Length: 155
Image (cartoon, rainbow, N blue to C red):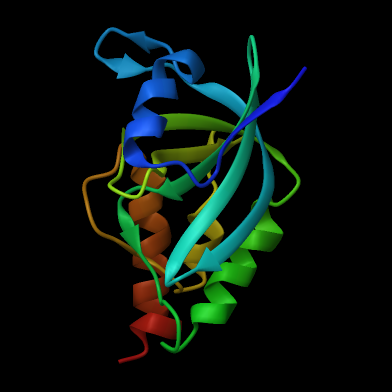
């Protein structure tokens, strides 16, 4: 089976393929299983490459929704991306799609065993939540790091 590579797709190309990869049902996309090939940072942009197989094999660029973390030369940037990399690389996850951004990245949540994959990064004080999350435990993880004044919460 051939792989359709959308890891460098435009927004238009990603949107065109979206309904072939994700199934829309009752106002949102259903979860799909994906394999995390690798996590990287290119041009100040974190990028998770996922492989999804349904009728075809899809390779997509994915970004995590609703959080910020250190970028480029900011303190803890390398530590944050490395922790995410060791947490999810070469593992199976569930994908909850929210949207497609202007760069053609699929954006949403990644879950492993019903837990968001960013929890270790939040608990280590290496990320902040930026929007309302459907996962209450994400707020607890961030509050823990803030209370302990870890990394980005030191000051």
